[in-house]
Length: 346
Ligand code: DP6
Image 1 (cartoon, rainbow, N blue to C red):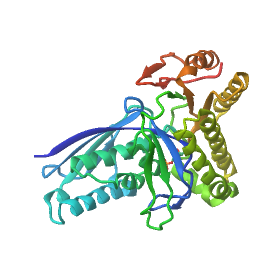
Image 2: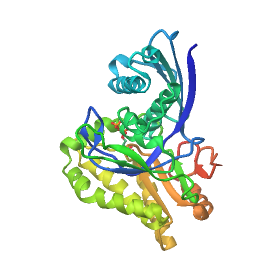
Image 3: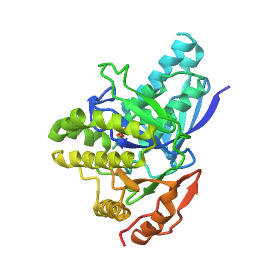
Image 4: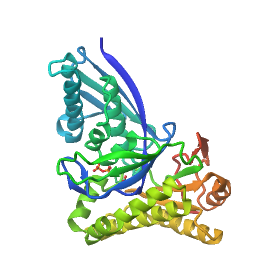
C-alpha cells in the first residue's frame, strides 16, 4: 500500500533579514535572522506526498507544473537527506528507503513575488516527507534550510531565530523558537500586496551579487546584526513593541540599502513601497510614538506590524490613502491581512 500524507506550512516574515551565504551549496548564512511565522490559515503551502512501492518514479509538481528534479539541486538534496534519515532510523536495507515519492504542492498566494513562497514551500515539503515516513527528528529545520534558507524558520510557529552558526558543515546552523504563537497574541501583521508578479532578481541571485559586490554587506553582518538580533529577541520576550518595531524598520531599510549598494543594484522597492514607508513614518510621528512598523523582503510588497488595539484606527487611515481594489480585508485567527489585491497610491 502506498502512503499518502498532506500537510500545510505557513510563510514567515523576517524582521532581521537573512541576506548573504557563506556556503552556497549547503545554504549557510553569513548572519543570524529573526522572523514571525504566520498562522497556517493565512498564506501557506499545502503539500501532498505519496510514497510506496507502487509509485513509479520521483516526481514533484508545484502549482500544477512538473518541476525537473534532475536539474534542481535543492530538491535533490531534500530528497536525499530524507532518505539518509530513513536509513538511519529504520535500517540501511529497509524497504521505505527504496520507495519512490510523488509530491504535489500548491501555494494559496502568488509564488516568487517576494512573499516568502520558497520558505513555506520547502518547509512544507520537508515536514510532509518526514510525516510520510514517520521521522520524528530535530533535523527538519536543517533539511528545510538546504531547500531554501528561510524555510528553516517556517518549521516553527511564533517567533523564530535562525542561528547562522560557525561550523563549515553547518551542524550549528539551525532555527530555534524564541516564543510560541501564544506569547504575543496582540501582534498583527498586515500584508499589502503592491505587485504580485514574479520578481526580476530572485533572492538567491540577489544575495549572491550582494556578497560579491556590496561593501556595506560586511559592515551589516559584523557590526549591526549581532546587536540587533540580541535586542529584538529581548524586545520579543518583553513584548516591547516600540523597540521591536524600530529594529524591524531599521533592518529592512539597511537590507534594501545593501541591495542598492550591490553592483549592478537590485531594486526591489518601487514607488508605492516608498509611499508606504513615508505614510508609516508620518503616521507614527503624528501619534507621537511608533505604533506601526514595516518590513519588505526581496519585492515591493509591505509587511506591517501593529498591535490589535491600534489596528482599526490605522486601517481606516490606510485604506483612505491606499485603497484596495476590492477592499476584502479579513480577520482570520487574529492576524489581519489584506487580500492579495493590488494596492495603488491614492
Ligand atoms: C529577503 O531563503 O529565499 O526574504 O536561501 O537562496 O533560497 P535562498 O534564499 P531565500 O531568501 C530570503 C531572503 C529574504 C530575507 C529573509 O527571509 O530572511
